[in-house]
Image (cartoon, rainbow, N blue to C red; front, side, top):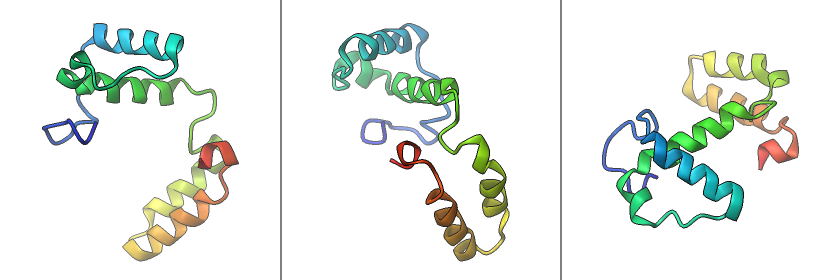
Length: 100
């Protein structure tokens, strides 16, 4: 996405719905679609849109409900260095699949 995106906020813009659905179907059937196809290069937003949809549909978020308060406290720290240290500490508490 970052290699082929040409605008700021690439993850904020939505892709074309039909392209998102096509990509979803390819992932579900092939497990490894060719993201270098013209349809995806011309609409790189469909890749980021599908990624966001996947994360929204997880039964437990990547950062987990159990660690939500710790992440919220970490990002609320004013000092950038302390904030990064605290975020890294909380990341280490994630279950292995989430951490990966």
